[in-house]
Amino acid sequence: MNIICVVAHPDDMEILCGGTLARYAQSGHTVTIAVFTDGSMGDAVIKPAELKGIREKEAHAAAGIIGAKVIWGDIVDEHVFPDAAQRLRMIDILREADPDVIFTHSPNDYHPDHRYVGQLVFDAYFQKGLPHIPGQQKPACRFGQAQVYYMDNLGGIGFSPTEYVNITETFEIKKQMLSCHKSQFEAMKDLADTNLLDMIEVQARFRGMAAGCRYAEGFTRLDAFQRGLTSRILP
Image (cartoon, rainbow, N blue to C red):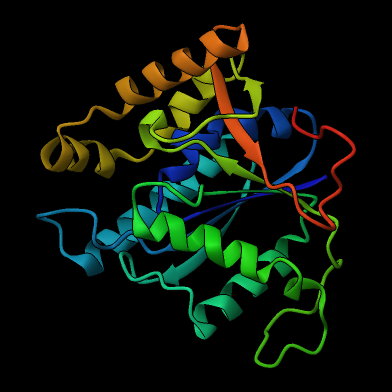
């Protein structure tokens, strides 16, 4: 299958979906990571032009650990809006991946970039398969057919998973991928008093407790027309 994880920022995938994507990659599926923004605003010291380059290199390094492809959306960080131009960009991203499974942010996550990326994925879902949408750079892919899963919220706040993936065997890979985002660690410590490795350890253990395993990631499936609801496709 073709798997895509569409996230707002560099490191969102590793925090919320890294173990699951590692399992897909190990099983021979094609994995794509689409980072919609350039990550340029996420530091109080490093200037945006410099930070953008740093964050893009880190995203590619992390994806390389599992052999995933990166699509760099290049929208200015902290400036995601569900407008016409960004919808066209999202349609092209989905067309490039031609996905069977789409992971993206939950509608009620804490960050507006996260929420709007999820909204753009929802809005672009059918249009990726319609060949006459004006202004598109990529040819239309399959209409419908892909299943959409919303990822956990940061800290699990306000999110009730309906499906879990056991990531016990891939949790170390998840940590390795997140560790590629070196510029994020100091920034998150300074700006939010947060240790990223501690955060994913606690959340994966908590979700694992509910799922009956050591470490897990939690998701909710978007149950809607043309989403193929009759079979479980998570690993």
